Amino acid sequence: LEAACQPTHPEMRRLDGPVPTTSTSSTTSLSNIACSAWQKYAYVGCFSDGPVGLWRPADVPSTIEGVQQCRDACSAEGYKYFGFECPHGSGKEVHCECSTGPGSEPLDDQKCKEFNPQSGAHCSGPFTASGSIGEYSMGAGSIASLYEEVACDVFASASAPDIGSSKIASFSVMLVCLTGI
Picture 1 (cartoon, one colour):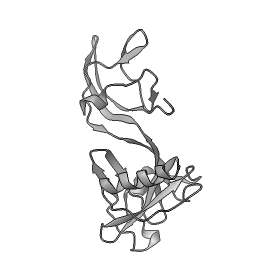
Picture 2 (cartoon, rainbow, N blue to C red):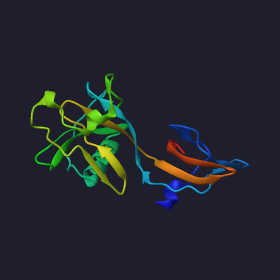
Picture 3 (cartoon, rainbow, N blue to C red):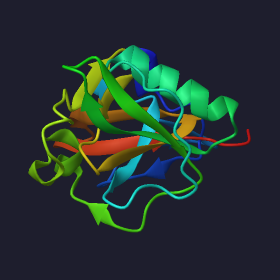
Picture 4 (cartoon, one colour):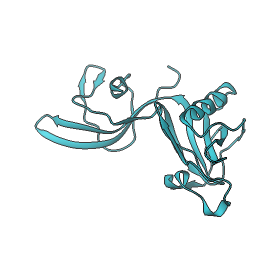
């Protein structure tokens, strides 16, 4: 986990809040950072209308291993995004969905982590899967979560006990995702 906390390249995309850093020449480094979570594949969002260019391979287990299986199936077919909809089978499986882009009807992220009463009882959960590659939303009935297929280094809820003369309690998320390098 400690290695995931260190930036691997000076070009970083910041998702939320100021990020305390110290810089030397073209290298960016973080000081006194303790990371509490990391995400291998970047979360794009939660959508009610389904992703663009949808292809659905076989269902995968509703586990972190299933997340990796879905990502690998989509990547092997050349899709830029992968995601999930309708965890079912008493927690045994979820629909894996591959796509070329996100849907146009974004929803609050929580909708991809809870039962959708509008869809009936078939899509009954579990609605998240977590493990060594992060935490992933499994979507719900007629609601899909979406992730980028390219692996990223992400850390969240990092705390910096002391930076210079001021104390900074925390900052939210930094994403290091380099494509084509």
